Length: 385
Ligand SMILES: Cc1ncc(COP(=O)(O)O)c(C=O)c1O
Figure (cartoon, rainbow, N blue to C red):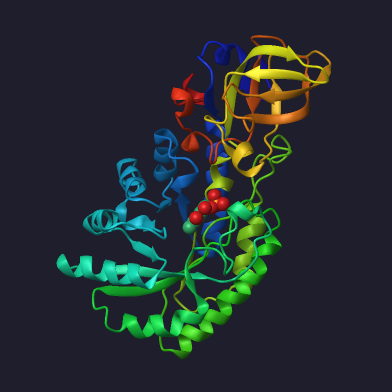
């Protein structure tokens, strides 16, 4: 029996909760991203933070993408999963000496640097090794991403990147940092940006900054626009693949790239979110005074997005075709924030029924924790079960 794209009988045989990845959908998504970036000569580094499941990483690496990492362990994991170091960029406001040293030893492509003290430390550590580190300055463009405040990163009040007001003095300091090679500028304004037009002010800001760097006589070979393209959490069946053509076309039209310059991107969520679902089993149905609760065996430890960002995930009962009823869908963790949905319409649900939380491939499995001494959820793949 299958329901939608879910092979129900096979899934019934696996211990819950677990992540289930639709590999065919991931491959289709990667194909479109490849086609669209190729059209404009753009380069895509997959944002490893979205999902670092080994099989997913290996597949993305095998399609020729680079990797965007935000910790030393992500850099290591990316290399071990088949991403060439020469295609790895490394961002993050708090890179430690150990992490920088590792990245220098591996000869990664570029450090996306977020502050002056970080530039100085990279210079010092590179000098000790007799190396030159390639860097892009992450600039805070003060552009509103119009998304949840916890996933907005490009406003002056956010901790990320260099403030534009300091760029003059940064360029002055760079003259004395002999083991740094400035190759580009980097931006990332936020995540789950549903309207591609939100990126227009970013393009305008990049164009202004390009003029600034040109006036200063600084040549930039790359402009990295970060990630942030959103997906349709409400309708994953109707829109399983994000609107990549519109997204890349917008940048191709609005960015004034200089001759020889290449635009780089770091999409995470839009690549992996829709291919993943969290599969969970109903432990109990509990009828309260005014509500009915579906208590499932997955909790905020397996998928924290609803508790962390009030995020919505579509939920389906894949083992019931009974008429719908309203339920609160809650987990077993001892926290009131441990719920997935309130007053949610599901096919009438019984103990033992399997529910799927859709669009959970990004910031799902990777954010799982062992709070309450729980086991981490495993990942299973549509072509290997
Ligand atoms: C620097 C950087 N690049 C890329 C991404 C990926 O963003 P998204 O998953 O929204 O595409 C993030 C996410 O936080 C980020 O911080």
